[in-house]
Length: 80
Image (cartoon, rainbow, N blue to C red):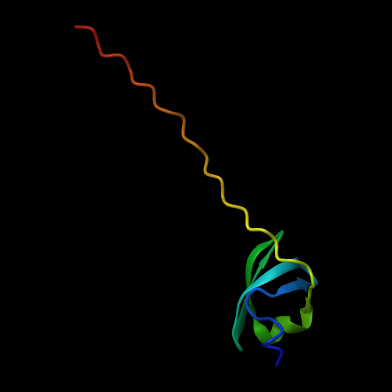
């Protein structure tokens, strides 16, 4: 089996999902994070025929930007 070919961090191209990065790989399962389709889990034996090794550089991970909440404006104290 080509387990060394698709080690963690390997760049691959899938026929349907395009370019991605191998996150983990065992004899039974392979997890790939695709650029345009997110993270997918496959049965290794079924997907290996659909993968080919890519020589591209790994994409730079973008940090998730958090939406900032608007600052709460203190309500004026009620007049008594």
